[in-house]
Length: 159
Ligand SMILES: *[C@@H]1O[C@H](CO)[C@@H](O)[C@H](O)[C@H]1NC(C)=O
Ligand SMILES: *[C@@H]1O[C@H](CO)[C@@H](O)[C@H](O)[C@H]1NC(C)=O
Image (tube, rainbow, N blue to C red; front, side, top):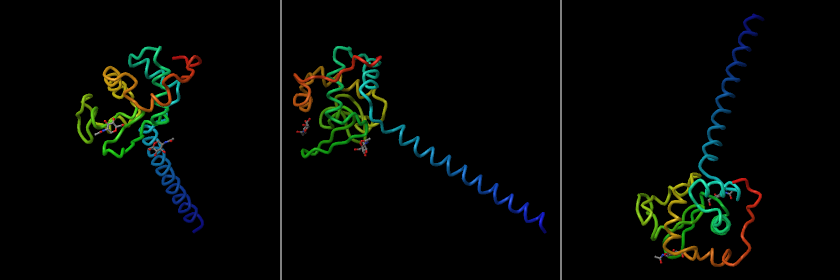
Protein backbone atom coordinates (compact mmCIF):
# COMPACT_ATOMS: atom_id res chain seq x y z
CA UNK A 1 0.00 0.00 0.00
CA UNK A 2 2.75 2.40 0.96
CA UNK A 3 4.76 1.40 -2.09
CA UNK A 4 1.78 1.84 -4.43
CA UNK A 5 1.11 5.26 -2.96
CA UNK A 6 4.62 6.45 -3.55
CA UNK A 7 4.58 5.12 -7.13
CA UNK A 8 1.28 6.94 -7.67
CA UNK A 9 2.74 10.15 -6.27
CA UNK A 10 5.77 9.80 -8.46
CA UNK A 11 3.52 9.40 -11.50
CA UNK A 12 1.46 12.50 -10.76
CA UNK A 13 4.63 14.46 -10.10
CA UNK A 14 6.04 13.44 -13.49
CA UNK A 15 2.74 14.28 -15.19
CA UNK A 16 2.74 17.70 -13.53
CA UNK A 17 6.30 18.37 -14.59
CA UNK A 18 5.41 17.38 -18.15
CA UNK A 19 2.43 19.71 -18.10
CA UNK A 20 4.62 22.52 -16.80
CA UNK A 21 7.17 21.95 -19.55
CA UNK A 22 4.44 22.10 -22.21
CA UNK A 23 3.11 25.35 -20.74
CA UNK A 24 6.60 26.89 -20.64
CA UNK A 25 7.24 25.93 -24.27
CA UNK A 26 3.89 27.43 -25.35
CA UNK A 27 4.58 30.68 -23.50
CA UNK A 28 8.01 30.93 -25.07
CA UNK A 29 6.61 30.39 -28.55
CA UNK A 30 3.98 33.08 -28.01
CA UNK A 31 6.46 35.63 -26.69
CA UNK A 32 8.94 34.76 -29.41
CA UNK A 33 6.45 35.11 -32.26
CA UNK A 34 5.32 38.51 -30.93
CA UNK A 35 8.92 39.71 -30.63
CA UNK A 36 9.69 38.37 -34.05
CA UNK A 37 6.97 40.46 -35.68
CA UNK A 38 6.98 43.79 -33.91
CA UNK A 39 10.15 45.65 -33.32
CA UNK A 40 11.12 49.04 -32.04
CA UNK A 41 14.49 49.80 -33.58
CA UNK A 42 17.31 51.65 -31.87
CA UNK A 43 18.99 54.31 -33.95
CA UNK A 44 22.15 52.21 -34.29
CA UNK A 45 20.17 49.12 -35.41
CA UNK A 46 18.32 51.25 -37.93
CA UNK A 47 21.62 52.72 -39.19
CA UNK A 48 22.87 49.16 -39.73
CA UNK A 49 19.74 48.25 -41.73
CA UNK A 50 20.04 51.40 -43.84
CA UNK A 51 23.65 50.54 -44.65
CA UNK A 52 22.78 46.94 -45.52
CA UNK A 53 20.16 48.21 -47.96
CA UNK A 54 22.33 50.64 -49.84
CA UNK A 55 21.56 53.98 -48.16
CA UNK A 56 24.50 56.37 -48.07
CA UNK A 57 25.83 57.11 -44.58
CA UNK A 58 25.47 60.83 -45.34
CA UNK A 59 21.69 60.43 -45.07
CA UNK A 60 21.42 58.12 -42.04
CA UNK A 61 20.64 61.08 -39.78
CA UNK A 62 17.73 62.17 -41.96
CA UNK A 63 16.23 58.68 -42.24
CA UNK A 64 16.58 58.02 -38.52
CA UNK A 65 15.06 61.39 -37.62
CA UNK A 66 12.22 60.66 -40.03
CA UNK A 67 11.55 57.14 -38.67
CA UNK A 68 11.63 58.45 -35.14
CA UNK A 69 9.22 61.29 -35.91
CA UNK A 70 6.87 59.11 -37.97
CA UNK A 71 6.61 55.94 -35.89
CA UNK A 72 8.89 56.16 -32.86
CA UNK A 73 10.89 53.52 -34.79
CA UNK A 74 8.03 51.06 -34.22
CA UNK A 75 7.65 48.74 -37.22
CA UNK A 76 4.03 47.81 -36.39
CA UNK A 77 2.65 51.34 -36.42
CA UNK A 78 -0.44 51.94 -38.57
CA UNK A 79 -1.94 55.39 -38.77
CA UNK A 80 -5.43 55.73 -40.22
CA UNK A 81 -5.69 59.23 -41.67
CA UNK A 82 -8.80 61.40 -41.90
CA UNK A 83 -8.57 61.24 -45.71
CA UNK A 84 -9.29 57.49 -45.58
CA UNK A 85 -5.79 56.38 -46.44
CA UNK A 86 -3.43 54.71 -43.95
CA UNK A 87 0.28 54.90 -43.36
CA UNK A 88 2.28 51.80 -42.52
CA UNK A 89 5.43 50.87 -40.68
CA UNK A 90 8.57 52.51 -39.43
CA UNK A 91 8.60 55.09 -42.28
CA UNK A 92 4.78 55.43 -42.45
CA UNK A 93 4.41 54.55 -46.11
CA UNK A 94 1.00 55.73 -47.36
CA UNK A 95 -1.56 53.44 -48.99
CA UNK A 96 -2.79 56.10 -51.44
CA UNK A 97 0.18 56.10 -53.74
CA UNK A 98 2.75 53.50 -52.70
CA UNK A 99 1.12 50.25 -51.60
CA UNK A 100 -2.30 48.54 -51.52
CA UNK A 101 -4.11 47.13 -48.53
CA UNK A 102 -4.57 43.37 -48.64
CA UNK A 103 -2.79 42.83 -51.94
CA UNK A 104 0.31 43.92 -53.82
CA UNK A 105 0.05 47.25 -55.59
CA UNK A 106 0.86 50.93 -55.70
CA UNK A 107 4.07 52.41 -57.05
CA UNK A 108 6.14 50.09 -54.81
CA UNK A 109 4.07 47.07 -55.86
CA UNK A 110 3.77 46.04 -52.23
CA UNK A 111 1.08 44.93 -49.82
CA UNK A 112 0.98 47.69 -47.16
CA UNK A 113 0.71 45.16 -44.33
CA UNK A 114 4.09 43.75 -45.37
CA UNK A 115 5.68 46.98 -44.11
CA UNK A 116 4.77 46.04 -40.54
CA UNK A 117 7.31 43.28 -39.92
CA UNK A 118 10.83 43.73 -38.64
CA UNK A 119 12.42 43.06 -42.03
CA UNK A 120 13.15 46.55 -43.36
CA UNK A 121 14.39 45.60 -46.81
CA UNK A 122 11.02 46.12 -48.52
CA UNK A 123 10.38 49.32 -46.54
CA UNK A 124 13.73 50.76 -47.56
CA UNK A 125 13.29 49.74 -51.21
CA UNK A 126 9.98 51.61 -51.22
CA UNK A 127 11.15 54.76 -49.42
CA UNK A 128 14.00 55.05 -51.91
CA UNK A 129 11.31 55.41 -54.62
CA UNK A 130 9.39 57.96 -52.55
CA UNK A 131 12.56 59.91 -51.96
CA UNK A 132 13.51 59.79 -55.61
CA UNK A 133 10.17 61.31 -56.54
CA UNK A 134 9.65 63.86 -53.76
CA UNK A 135 12.85 64.01 -51.72
CA UNK A 136 12.40 64.00 -47.96
CA UNK A 137 9.67 66.62 -48.51
CA UNK A 138 7.46 63.62 -49.37
CA UNK A 139 7.07 63.31 -45.57
CA UNK A 140 5.48 66.41 -44.03
CA UNK A 141 6.70 65.23 -40.63
CA UNK A 142 10.28 65.41 -41.92
CA UNK A 143 9.73 69.04 -42.91
CA UNK A 144 8.41 69.82 -39.45
CA UNK A 145 10.79 67.84 -37.25
CA UNK A 146 13.99 67.14 -39.21
CA UNK A 147 14.55 69.72 -41.93
CA UNK A 148 17.21 72.18 -40.75
CA UNK A 149 17.13 70.62 -37.26
CA UNK A 150 19.83 68.85 -35.35
CA UNK A 151 19.82 65.23 -36.57
CA UNK A 152 20.33 62.11 -34.42
CA UNK A 153 23.99 61.53 -33.60
CA UNK A 154 25.08 58.18 -35.00
CA UNK A 155 28.82 58.75 -34.67
CA UNK A 156 28.96 56.20 -31.84
CA UNK A 157 27.18 53.47 -33.81
CA UNK A 158 29.50 50.91 -35.31
CA UNK A 159 27.45 50.56 -38.48
C1 LIG B 1 4.21 49.64 -31.43
O1 LIG B 1 3.02 49.96 -32.13
C2 LIG B 1 1.96 49.07 -31.88
C3 LIG B 1 0.83 49.44 -32.81
O2 LIG B 1 0.54 50.82 -32.76
C4 LIG B 1 1.59 49.14 -30.41
O3 LIG B 1 0.54 48.25 -30.14
C5 LIG B 1 2.81 48.77 -29.58
O4 LIG B 1 2.51 48.93 -28.21
C6 LIG B 1 3.98 49.67 -29.94
N1 LIG B 1 5.16 49.20 -29.23
C7 LIG B 1 5.91 50.01 -28.48
C8 LIG B 1 7.04 49.37 -27.77
O5 LIG B 1 5.69 51.21 -28.39
C1 LIG C 1 -3.80 61.52 -47.38
O1 LIG C 1 -2.81 62.04 -46.57
C2 LIG C 1 -1.52 61.48 -46.77
C3 LIG C 1 -0.60 62.04 -45.73
O2 LIG C 1 -0.67 63.43 -45.68
C4 LIG C 1 -1.07 61.76 -48.19
O3 LIG C 1 0.21 61.17 -48.39
C5 LIG C 1 -2.07 61.16 -49.15
O4 LIG C 1 -1.70 61.46 -50.47
C6 LIG C 1 -3.46 61.70 -48.85
N1 LIG C 1 -4.42 60.99 -49.67
C7 LIG C 1 -5.36 61.63 -50.37
C8 LIG C 1 -6.33 60.75 -51.09
O5 LIG C 1 -5.44 62.84 -50.41
